[in-house]
Image (cartoon, rainbow, N blue to C red; front, top):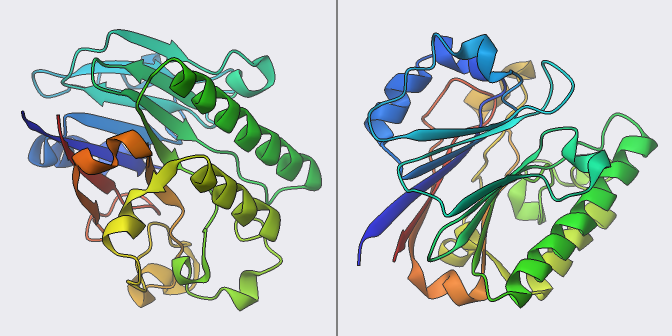
Amino acid sequence: MRTLKLVSWNVNGIRAALKKGFLDWLKQESPDIAALQETKAQFEQVRNDFILPDGYSVHWNAGERKGYSGVVCLTKLKPLSVRNGFGIERFDKEGRIIVMEFPEFTFLNIYFPNGKQSQERLDYKMDFYDATLDYCQALRKQGKKLIVCGDYNTAHKEIDLKHPKANADQSGFLPIERAWIDKFIAHGYVDIFRTFYPDEPDQYTWWTYRMNARAKNVGWRIDYFFVSEDLKDTVTGAHITTEVLGSDHCPIILELKI
């Protein structure tokens, strides 16, 4: 049995992150899997600067629109298979999903849509949420144990953002978005951070760049590790590393024994 360290981080542009010490962070943290979201680049745009520490393989999903969205997985573990997308063209073309299968679990790195731009994008986000649940449930029917991480772009409970009342009518904290997370949990997925810290306030993963929000810790917890219930007992730790800079999000960590 060994302990694995898994990291999820919305880097808000991998090219910017590389200039802010991303590779130094990766070498020091040395996760077994690093799931990155909002990478905003094709691999060819960073190839010369993306010199990974020994032992890592890279899996890239950039989507069609350049400079937008995108997810990347870096892994020391050898996956049995890697898939980009759910098999639904309207979602897959934005480059938001990587699914890696390992002997002990299936790992999903997802950058969920932001619904703030328009009603159309909010509808897209909710449809994407439903597609995610359907896809996860299909995997579980095959006997897969799941880890579903990424930027969900929704704070679940009032404890998960600094000013819940002021944001009650904003996408990211709308009742319909929060209700989907309730539904996800009801289907057997566990918010691991809240399992370890059910009542811990002021624990955030994203801060706007405006109004000195990060220094004041005026933030939102919108990045999550969810695991299927059959993996819950293997998890030994969950952390939010607020001290790590380089993005408007910070990395979150999951530790488990396999």
